[in-house]
Image (cartoon, rainbow, N blue to C red; front, side):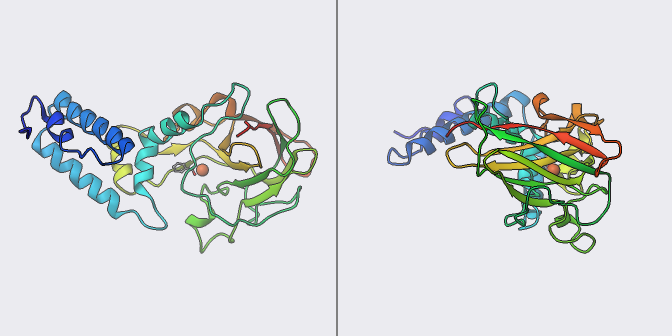
Length: 279
Ligand code: BEZ
Ligand code: FE
């Protein structure tokens, strides 16, 4: 029997069309999506003009996506959706290091570096030593952990945003822990920066009275055999934007200490230990 469309039973009419032979998980996800989408339009009594605006907004968002720019992920990030999906998929014991948003600026294939090397190649900014250890839940050192790090330069840009101005692989590198599980590298103290806000997502933030800033952070992607991948940052503890990160990435336990060093090789030192969860 066919189900005709009515305002009252709109979602049911759409969902009744799904074939029994289609993938059960796809059916579950799509049926819920249709239910929530229809309930949303009913709740706000969406006008035709608002529907047209939404279609145009999503079209412009897609048109800005390329190999270099992913405006849809930025939309997901700024709506807190990326952090929610990450939280659902990475529930960990209390003592384990938490994930945060991956962001668009990771680049595969960064140079492998030796412990103690410096990742800042442009000589700008306040120098900082990053050190600590990678441990398991029992506190044992994790050997062979690959620590892929990246951050912005002192002007607030990643190397890939300024290919003409910055040396390639500036503020990036991969370090592998030895038997003691320790890591140590020099770089610059990261600075806060605005996410790309010259497109539809930037317009949305402005219309909503939101700013585009992210508090200063160092990105870490840590992988080790037998352990869950950790995608995270350490945040600079005194940053003014910590309480209002544009992409909701801040978690209290990811805020790291940055200490001034007098008479040392670097001006700052940031110590942070990572705790991995078994797979
Ligand atoms: C980042 O930290 O690199 C980032 C994360 C989400 C959106 C934009 C940038
Ligand atoms: Fe970042």
